[in-house]
Length: 224
Image 1 (cartoon, rainbow, N blue to C red):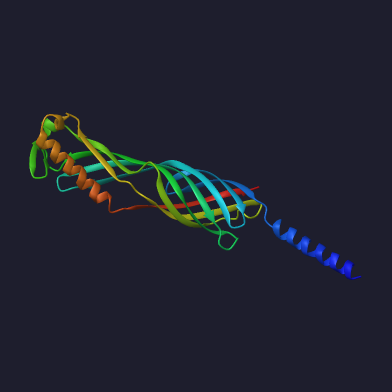
Image 2: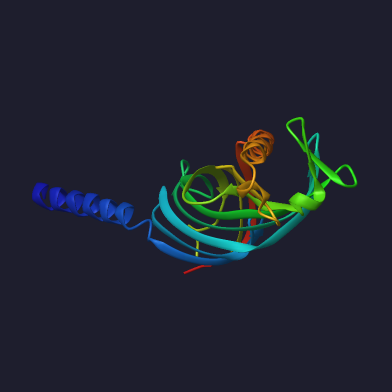
């Protein structure tokens, strides 16, 4: 009888252990999303009740705006797209998760500048004829390459079927500005070239006031 009871208890313990091990099955999710990086898609693999990985891509978002320094009025069109590879941690083994990883953004604006005066440009206190310079144009880069990312979200990837998800986070920026003139006047005048580089630095200093780009995403997914 003792041996039978021992064998029965062992079987129950083994069964309980097996059921706890098998309580979570890894799941794959695919989804579509929209947010501050555009419209796109994602694939997510939740390989543990508390851990998963997600790959996303979104793009097609454009913003138009203007900006001015003391000397020049600028207009720009910002095009935004970004991919991401992230590690997701579910601290409560449910829907809420924390995430961190790398984003691969392409956020650039083509800018054009016009003088605040009719026939002259002024850079760093120096006056130049608009007929010599032509027009000022260039590129403002908000972020490119690989940038760190961190955020938090809500996702039903632990259950099969359709679901919605959302995420809020921040991505580091890497500001760069490059200006030139239509008449290539910077190649003709060393003084103007130095003044134009100072103008680039002014624009960069203003853009650097945004050290992070806000990322907000909502979407619909299906978990297998």
